[in-house]
Amino acid sequence: MSDIRMVPVADLPEDFTGDESRILLDVREPDEWESGHVRGALHIPLGDVPARIEEIDMDADLLVICHSGGRSMRVLEYLNQRGYEGANVRGGMIAWAEHNRPVVTGA
Image (tube, rainbow, N blue to C red; front, top):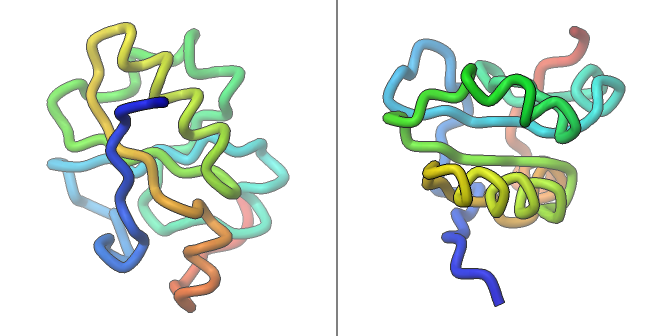
């Protein structure tokens, strides 16, 4: 069983714009991102993470989100092996929607 920390949606801000102390990394595919994402999130699809890892600030509080939590967990396991620490957003964008949190649509 993984020891990756889980963070509930209710503990997160609705907007990550301008917050340089923490990163919300969205690892969903481009079509999922365009259908609705958290304002201020960093979008790097799961398959692109290894090639774009330098875009993720190691010093920031890293939170990873996907649709339901599976892909974000895999990304965190990968990043942990490379020295990053982070937390998985419990329930992903499904939980975000269930909590009536705002989303931004489009690229």
